[in-house]
Length: 429
Image 1 (cartoon, rainbow, N blue to C red):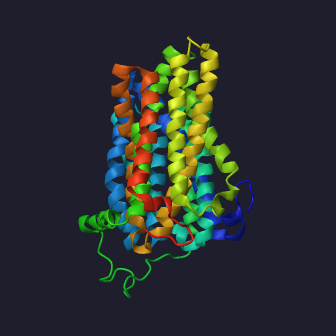
Image 2: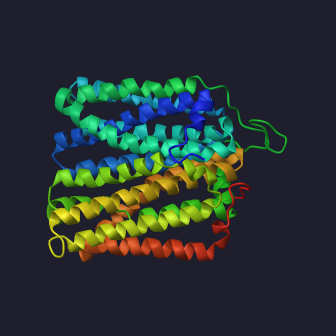
Image 3: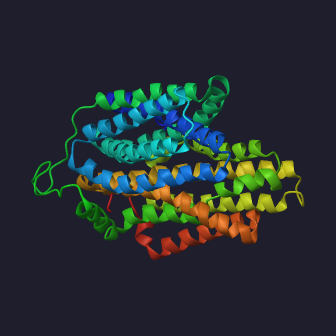
């Protein structure tokens, strides 16, 4: 088993290689557009609150279409669903470029485009993730998920940096145009796939009586499955514990302005440190495929995330007291890098369990729930962290949040001991 990032899925599977290349480039464009939209909203309004509303306009369609989109993925050809959703995202990218070229001055236009793009993403993401188990062997899924997490962290580093350069050099028109162009890569990757209709259910194929039509009852079927499958359920609960109890990003502005110093540069460095840690962890992820106790690995990773966030809080509390601001910042950056690495390892195994232990006819719906958890958890964590910080201070908030995360995952592991015994060689939901 290699030590470095396992490239076997890329080497052996042409369909996966095209899909991976297409979405890696498209994700860079998406991260570029996220930063550009925030900058344009602020330029139009000069209001941080207006920028904050971007998150609300993103979250609502993510939740709605994440749940409903999963039923579409389970009911129709996954290639077709993915192509349709990604085509909508491409049209939205074109409209973003068009409004910039036309000199738009109305912020509501940007809010509508954000909502439309996130609705498309909430469908395309579960479609893509549900495709992987159909084109790859089960033993290749950990490597494929490590490659996906590596690409996502890389896009979260490259995309914002590219946005800053393009907006400074050519303005919003250039930034959005580049996003639209590279978004076509994902369309290319999906278009070259073979047809991927739903697998038979109870001897009935496709849209027969063995598979409920898309709608609210179909969504509830996914939740009913989740309620009775403790191992799959724990992958969601573990992530909620990490993102809700120990989400640090709401603390970064105060860290830059008051605690570590450095302003926006420090905020950017703290954000990038997590992505860099994730890239580093995935670069040396070759042996993750040999880990069979994947539930135990998730518990350890979530505990590592919590401990690292507590370390960030300790650096904040010690800044200007025991440590100089510069020294404390380096400790904080190291803590965020460790946190990013732990979160990336957790993401690999959570996704692998979800793909391996969930029946094919429910994968889309469970991936839709996954999108809701991934999108909603950090935003709820921001809300809780901001409220606690107002009363306890940023440093203590991070320490308490990190400790609460560690305590929560330990309690969850004791309540659900079967999760610690989960064996990837015999995946049971």
